Image (cartoon, rainbow, N blue to C red; front, side, top):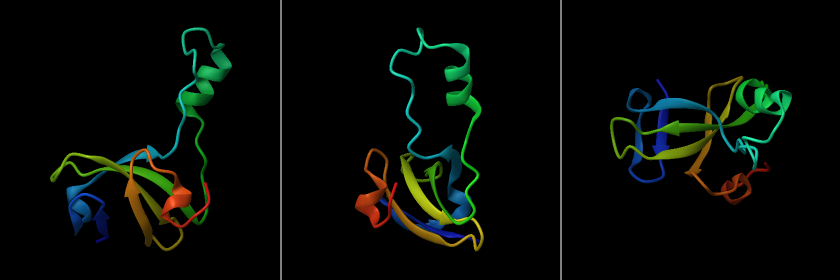
Length: 95
């Protein structure tokens, strides 16, 4: 079981959290005006990184807050966590 450190509550067991997809996804500015290919890319295309990957998680059985986790997909090791809305570089990595 993973031990994930919620930036708001501290370390907790993985079962308290829910994975919510890739972190730092930016919605197109004019979503109603963008073409189908751009909208489909936003909805469905995700990086499938081998190694450290920024993910969005939610502490569903705790504070309920969303936050970001940098996790190594090869070892399943949590590298760092940081609040949603903060840049990954502030947490010690590159975006």
